Image (cartoon, rainbow, N blue to C red; front, side, top):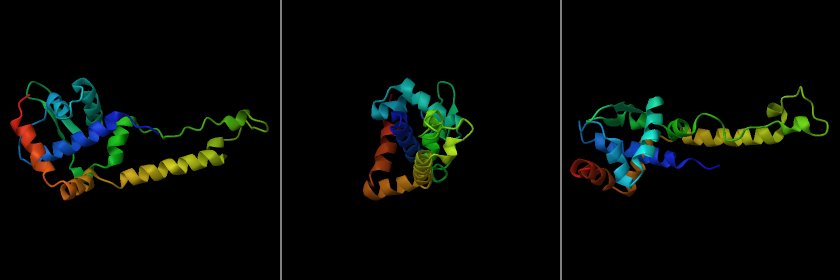
Length: 164
């Protein structure tokens, strides 16, 4: 399974918004500034951020002084929330029920339920989702602070002192 690169961009951007907002009322962060931090294409990043808005992870403010803010605390945003916002809710495996067409296949059988391959793939997808749901962005933030203690202040400084 390969995730869209927008998932990585969205996760990092949410963490950056968390660092920025810890500085107090700094207003909404414009897409161009958020994209510039990692040298990302602003239009494509904006598409990812709008997906986060639709899922209630971010809020957006239109206009010349507009941009994005976290709509929820990092403690209330799981990695799965972000993945689902960017990738959608569909599972990683979609059983096409090819057993229906094979020798001895039965058009009336739901092979999504009875096929052992489908069951295995569904079980793996659920385990992956459970793991992503168990990890919040606050958990990641804590590990970043532990391993790279200067990251919050240097990120805030970049956003507060760098003009776009």
